[in-house]
Image 1 (tube, rainbow, N blue to C red):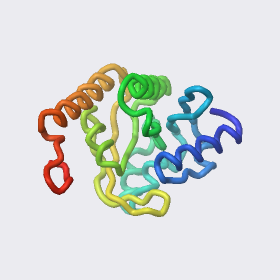
Image 2 (cartoon, one colour):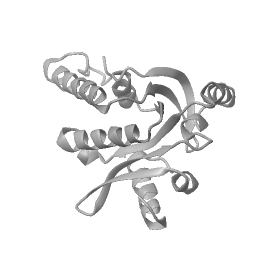
Image 3 (spheres, rainbow, N blue to C red):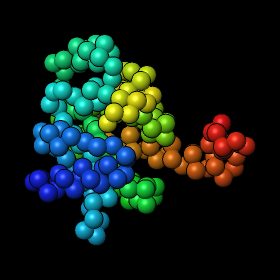
Length: 191
């Protein structure tokens, strides 16, 4: 996505979907990707190799500085602001979204992929792709403090990642139907 109007649309739709704002300066210095359906932006993500890395900016200063030092000089792409509208998650459109995002990440040529989340559902999904957990603890996103995770993964073929993500989703759906680990017992908390 290019141009001020497109970046503003991305920022507005990202905030609508996630509840978080994204600084326009981050969008201007990054590769902003958008999925458009019937003329409407329904998902996207941001790829960047420019310092400061947004994923690390969420961390407390000591951890941020320690990880920044460990990653300095490495060829990496920072993947942030990934979102897909609630009405488009799951199914073929979600697979198309993730497949396209993973191919674009691969095309950066970076050796490593840095990404994070504070959403438990995405954390469970990201664990399935065999990424290294670099950090778990408090993060601050758009002024909101939450628990979060930061991962690092070698940038390889998107196909094994897509297979693992698809199997994860299928297991979770099957578990809901048969009372498996994804079943919510009384009280509403996940087992």
